[in-house]
Image (tube, rainbow, N blue to C red; front, side, top):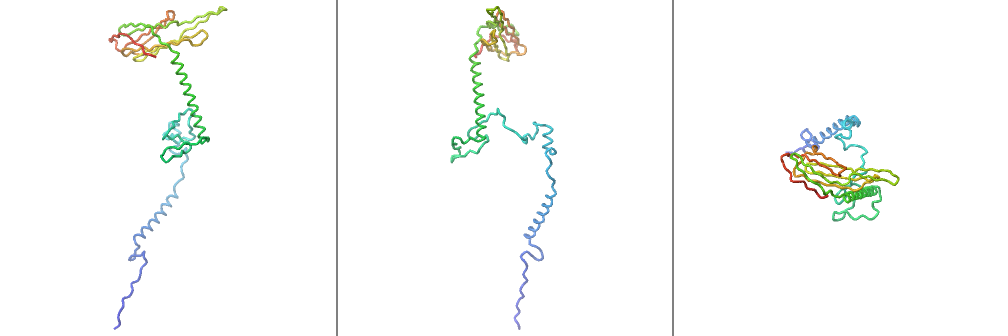
Length: 261
């Protein structure tokens, strides 16, 4: 008897499993097919709409600078009078700033801001300083030029109160050597608030220049009705009569006080 030997089993390619493709190979082929399908679909997309035909363009054309898409405006520039806040941790644009090991900006050598950004920064700072100096000068002149009107009397008349203020000379008159006559009258302003009244008197010289400036702030005991308050000027006597209309007509006042300027 001949010894029988088993026949060798036929080998299959690694991607064949009982007549079917392996799952891993199937997924790869499907992904390739889906990729081709997506590429075919993407190739059918239309070009982007022109700006005037898009929703952004229509909204901007309808609402102008009040459009919801205001951030898409072209040609935006920093206003010349803009106040630029600078300091540690504040980003104001310009060149990158080198940080040290501690995370703080390193000291920049002199002349490192000679570019366009440095010039704009210097110009803005110069304008701000000039504006601040002008405002401080105006405030100093205003505070130094006013004197207080201290002479006044008070009268409670039920639903209203009257304050009689002695304002001094409200008329100016001068005669020249040639016989010319010049006249001038003081300018008076009165501001009524719910709990106060401010009287300002500015005399005008005959040459048109400003003379003395006097003022007084009267504090009311209770609220008044500003649009019902009035004043009257007697230029001959140099007196200003202020009538304060009470909000509570039954409330009796003991007087009015003045506030320091």
